[in-house]
Image (cartoon, rainbow, N blue to C red; front, side, top):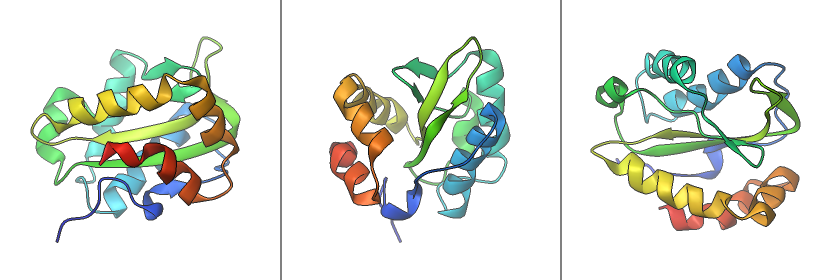
Length: 145
């Protein structure tokens, strides 16, 4: 059975996370529970973050696994974690939207570029931060399929 890259169940609204680690854990946990990745993919997300921050600017972070984590991906998927109060990703970089990515066979680059296009518009980020339903976020990211 193939699961959509992004479904309502992959979105957590109004998350109450206090640390970058909790935020990344939550984004990874969604990918694990929805069957996109193996459990150990979350560790690879932390490894990636230790190498270089996944903070992208505009209140957005895109946590994902390292290059070697690709073997842990069962199928491409996204998780979205909305943190309206923000979480500090270090250096005063506040993140209000996390987009967890699991890509297989190079798909992650295509997914990343589509996500980057949506996130390059500050207006879209504000809509995601203020969204009160999963459908509002799905509508913004429906191009990512």
